[in-house]
Length: 277
Length: 277
Image (tube, rainbow over the protein chains, first blue to last red):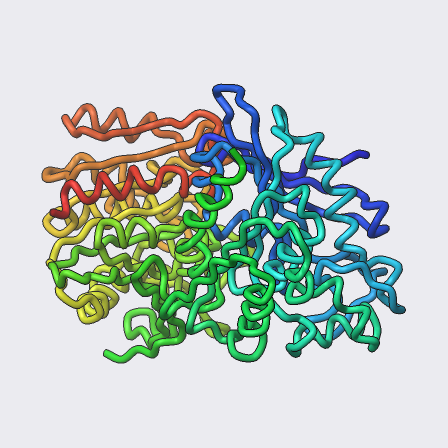
């Protein structure tokens, strides 16, 4: 396990790091970003994962959300993976919603994707080991949040690892990927046409299972992708049928951008911290 | 006076706008961004100007600083110009520190720059008229802040218009442009080799004049440009000789990036609001 520091910036008293490493899981060089709070009192530090949306790298959240103010306020570490394997030798697609920048947090089984597109295992196993090694005084407590494709990722990873993640939250997530164009395109390519195989990667299926952690979802009403890609009806229906409590909030006038995310990020951090202490 | 809305995003209850317009002063199409707070109580709204640094457009501050949280909290409008004239027909330079993205907030007098590079007049006259027309319930009170080259711009514009700007603040500003490589290169090109002509564009000269508004400056000690470009010695010496009070703060471990700006932006907004109410 080796990784190289490529950027370091003091921010709100803590430190924002960016690293490069070779991923055995993805078989390519990857970058990730991690924020460590100042921890002046040398207390135990929990860890929040942030999963980004289509076209993003680990830079979008670290540079545009201002989350460092909140992570320092609450004394929590934040780990930000990239959204797919990267490199000229890695399979790609001309569309923004498949291939590099669009890993969908699954383990691909289909050619030409199956060699490198293992973002689920990369995050849940390999990057987790790295994160643990980088957080001093790690409390062992984790939660997960994300945006859009990364909201889908946060829900899927959180719901598949309910012992591990104490809370899940998402901004404008893809809640029913098997039903919407983005998800159908990605799952067809990465997992194949047999839709039965898609179920373990779909939050609207996983929410049926026992042991769901607390979930907060925030969605803007002016989100340009809302009606086609991000509809909540099926997810909330299945959650209700299974007696799961989901705090789903629609915010008037907000779109899909970081202007929306930054506005409600403090509420999400406060929600996570209730379960990380 | 016409301008076209090209982006609008709700943010922290207010609205972040981006416009395009044809500038008569610069003789080219320009973009600018402006934030309007929600103003639910329909009170009088002051205006803060933000001037950006080398290579920036009006997007950097609007997308990376998170200032909207503060502008909404304090119910103040924020106007963000671009940093130079733009376009294929506009003179440019291969370096990042001259030409497009590097207007230095002066009125150029030398070829090939003098036709378009009039950022001082563009901001102080043309864009001011537009800003006034865009801020409902404008209180008439203004202040100005900026970063690096934009910190120089904020000081120069603020000190040349002391009746107008109630406060000036800057992050890692070029305080003595006539003495440092960035300023010497830009002033030589835009204003010519006669350094006497540079004085009305140099904060270390302008600080001698009467009527200085309150000034706050924040500088990171790990700023990679600090020793070569941003030295404060001359400026503070001349300010002291002229009995001017400058609150100059050095912050341990911070660099030149937006990670630094975001950390101390709340303090700057609070400083401005003391003089805008």
